[in-house]
Image: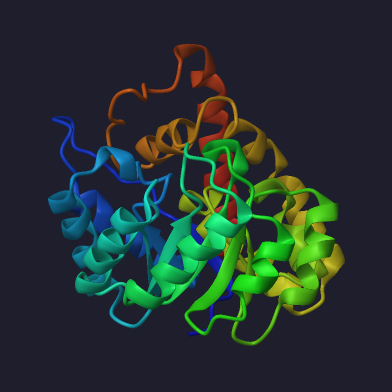
Length: 296
């Protein structure tokens, strides 16, 4: 498995009645394939995983796997607050045909670093899929430290890290851990180009839901060492990154997807984008369209 380039953490489209919209799901995946995306994440936090039941989770995953058909890597979000539940969810992902499991640090329970080593080791050995570690302390209340990653990346079943902290000090500690069989992936859109130019291999992105070709182009420029061109394109996306943070993810990105005709809303307790942001959402939708047209 070679994790690299632009990987999209897919939002889950719903119908007006609130059910998963498999037609919109298919069209969203088509835009990713056409845009040059290397992989997709099904049922991560952007995909409202906590709001999906097991039947919906499997339905979305199987549809994605069938459509990807070797053209995209399919990662499934399987992280839970308990190790046994995480292993069970990883089995569900394995049975649905996922290529790897994206496993967030256990939310809310705040394990120690030794607890994280034991947790991830158990998932890697019993879950039946390669594991990509996922650190996003702002959501989970738990920080997977670089020295813990250094221990875990020696395990043959652990193949990568999605690091959502964007500070340079964190990345400087992580860059030396990169290997052919262990990929460092940014999980922070506003700083991912800096991480790529420093030694990360790719990004797992929210923004690439709506600008997949632009993100593929950014990753290609960074991989080719064209740092000035990468930074210039990245600068044009800064307003989009800012907009995607005006309300909790995935509210803003789903507002943009709705303007592209993909999906109708969210599940409680998430609400649609506040009306006060609609004018800005319209402007961002126009920006996305223009950038994708230029990049195509």
